[in-house]
Length: 161
Image (cartoon, rainbow, N blue to C red; front, side, top):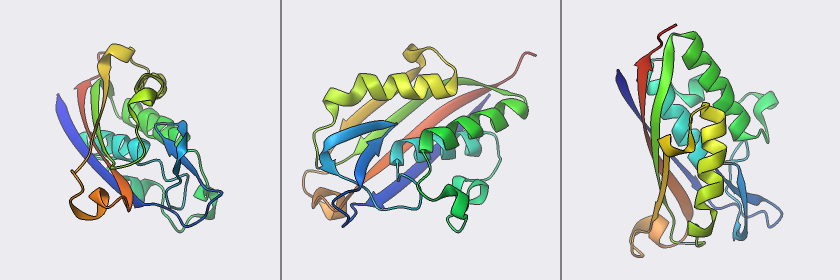
């Protein structure tokens, strides 16, 4: 078994047309995040956790920000590709635990949809996916509402194939 952790942070975008996407869920009441892809910090942190647990590098190495093919990409598609790579390397998913840190907007109404999207990408039961939300009580850049961060931890086991 192996444990992996991932962290991703993005600032809010100045583009009023940019949508906020977290774990593939479009959150209408929040400004979008700046980034090369759709800037989905949840999917990015989850992918980094998987890659770390499998000792396969990180998301930036797998999908470089200088790659025009990734511009505007759906991060759940990127996560699905990472899952395929991890499975091909002989691992199977155990569980995923994600903590999202955001002063705004309110995210708890979207928890079940986020868990469902992540479970689908990981090919696990939704019971194996946890998504939690917290704030920094107005401390630091995240507390000032300048962006959103996500931390993810996953467990991989050797595949029994």
